[in-house]
Amino acid sequence: MKVLAIGEVMMRLTPPSHKMIEQTDTLDLSFSGTGLNILSGLSRNNVKTSLLTGLPDNSVGKAATVFTRKLGVDTEWVCHQGNHIGTYFLELGFGNRPSQVTYLNREASSFCSEVIPDNKIEAAVESHDIIHICGIALSTSLVSRQLILRAVELAFEKGKKIIFDFNYRPSLNTRVDHEQLFSDYLYILERSHLVFGSPRDLAHFYQTDSMTEEALIEKLLTDFKEIEWFTGTTRTENQGLSGWLVTNNGERVVSPIHSITVFDRIGTGDAYASGIILGYLRGWSLQETVDFATCAADLAHTTFGDSPILDESFIKRFMTNPEAQVFR
Image (cartoon, rainbow, N blue to C red; front, side, top):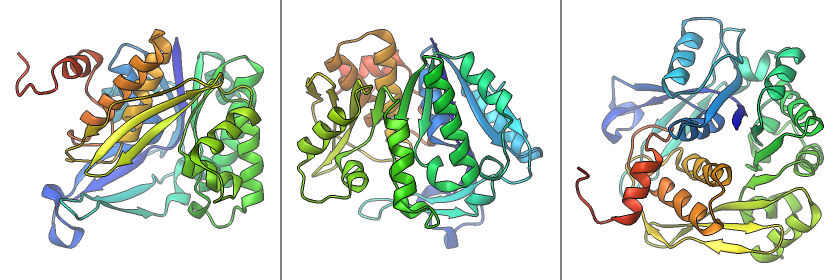
């Protein structure tokens, strides 16, 4: 099975040693994006992955492409056009201080401003079995919105599995009204098979604060018959993390609560998503899938950078021996 992700790649700039921006003269540079991060987790486990995106036609775009290849992700479908990449500063939190993300001029990025040719979109979708998309792209620009909707149209017509990361955030682009976003989400959810999200996403989507979490999830799975799984994570008190998954036939599984130690929090949800997708591809039981994905998210808190780098073997060793200090 070949997995294609469609989404933006951004440049991440991070002050070292958990410093604030005004405290540093140097920055760690890397590249990130929901789709790229998820593909990284899958490629570590011998899943064939590709990224469809737009990157600038300059040395920065080439560096992002090289970075993508280092993660084991195929770049055949990367379009180099335009001259700008979306950038964000990440000031890593420590102790009680949360991390802070500052975006710079995201709408001007190649992905958000340059149109990818339709024949390239169609060829990329045709050559893969599973298509992953992220809802953020519906809000960042008209160009990215049209790309996502076209890819979903093609994927559904061609009988591909569609994985949708909900990320319902109307605040990202105030020029897109709720009615338009709601219509776009309806279109995608009617065609999606695996959906990542949270009850909070659903409350925003349905514009309600009166329904329970269980009722919101039940409504989603009743309204959209193509969805097989709806899954996400829950943060608990004292740095706890638990994964959960609900199927379209009413099955619900929940992982044990993990006590999290945070080194770098960004991208940990993508590690969870890659674990769920891996379990789906491998045909694992629901419980095994959620337990593995939650453990992957737990461990992703302990590594630097957004992209998951720990493979199935390491994660499963940790699952069987979580108290180990050294693996030999």
